[in-house]
Length: 529
Image 1 (cartoon, helix red, strand yellow):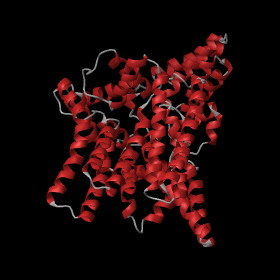
Image 2 (cartoon, one colour):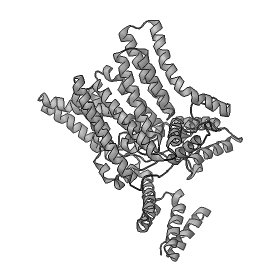
Image 3 (cartoon, one colour):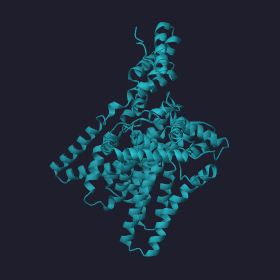
Image 4 (cartoon, one colour):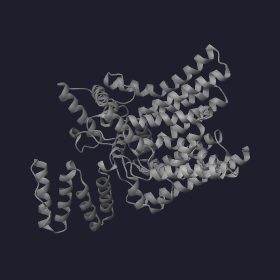
């Protein structure tokens, strides 16, 4: 593809990305979804307001990645505590992600595959969804594809500045979630490949290795120094990793987000406190945030090693989620958003590209050298996903890289067809279609999670925001029907309070009595008439 034609295609990709995001933002800000603060969204908004108010350092070791909180605080400081400017900047970052996917694809696949990858990223529904919420998820795709792009530039022009830039992207990604440190491995492999191909001498090997390591360290160092200043403990970024690992591998793990019983129904800040309290109880002394994280990491490792068959099953559950169309909810629910904003259904999701991506990966495995960096970046994200649990937001970082392979897979089918290899083209297309069809099936152990309950709760909150009492009642009844045991009491109480407000005292009393009985530990009465 010539430079002029390539620039025209890039402009089209950017235009599609801007148009899709502008349309989504307008629809989102006009809906009850706007302004919701659920789970970590509220945690980060409150934290950013605290920083913007002058509390720059805080008083404890970070429990969650700090980069987004400080960036959001800067926006709040300039524009006031309004979400719209932050969301506009995040959506602009999504446009940059699409442009970087296009730039990477130009170096890896044909013009046809490049166009496919760029447009797929520009219009990819879940990416736009994550970009337009007050949450850090959008940074993971951006930094991941930046790492791949800068690593590919290093292969073209073996100067240390490209490697240092890639290392800086890894370091910044670690300030979002520390598992991104795994992206340093693909860069180290890229350094080794480029060094061998170019015949690096010892001094150049050392200089380039130091450039990579120093860039990563330079991004992380401020967080580590700040943590030491406030706590006297050396913590690289956060003291929450052990808790995440325990949720992923502890005795109550199921492959999805399933906190242990001692956490209960607490929000993010209270969850961390509950983990510390339980660690203190078990150890017989008060523990710090860092000590608590180390304790739960040890407990998780012990549990995983002691039950290898169970650990293998959990890994399979998570891999099935990784390659599935379903966006496991964390802060918002993609399926509910598609109901509120129906045109979102026209945008591609992972199932649409699952088969093409796997076909693209399979087609490069015989000669992987050119694709080694994106392959290893994909593997790093897959490993991180398996080590944690199935959240759609945890998968988001790998999506731009997957789309590179989807573009290659689509081009492979077209290439075989153009070469009149009709049988091979049909076989490749059928393979991609079969994989995508499977991706739209429920993932493993899907029925063990209370997704129907979570959906009903979110739909109930949206009905309240619209002032629709009838819909609110119906969603509350749905929530009660699907509520897990530890949520039954609050579901009964919420429904009872609504019935009381609408003048149905007898039915309200039955549900409120059921809530009281559940909270007291007794067997609840049947609230049905």
